[in-house]
Length: 97
Image 1: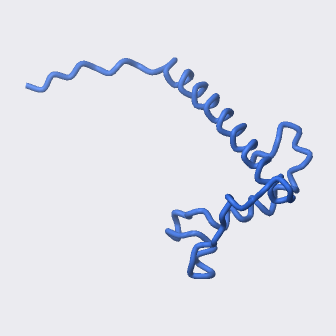
Image 2: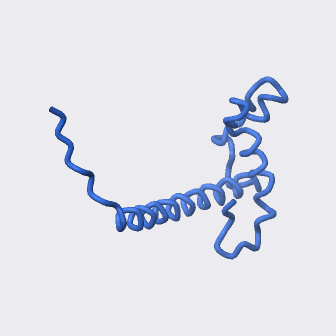
Image 3: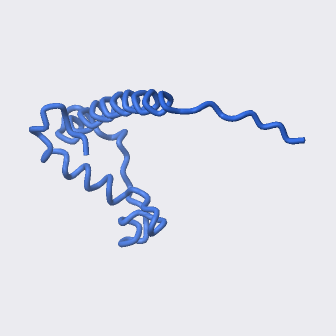
């Protein structure tokens, strides 16, 4: 789980992380834990979150974290590709007759 570079406020993200985990598709059950327990998907509309409430601030912070994670993952992908391509052999010529 990514929280921030300083990693001092990880506990403030636990409720949102728990919500995300419980509402994520799991390959072993082919459904989310929330659906397994309640038989339906949760109703959550982020469009109603505003800056005037703590949930709105958390939403803004979460969006910032998601942007940071996306940027870090893209950098990691480039790094992994560079290392993989470094030792990758050219494909052999194949001429089916």
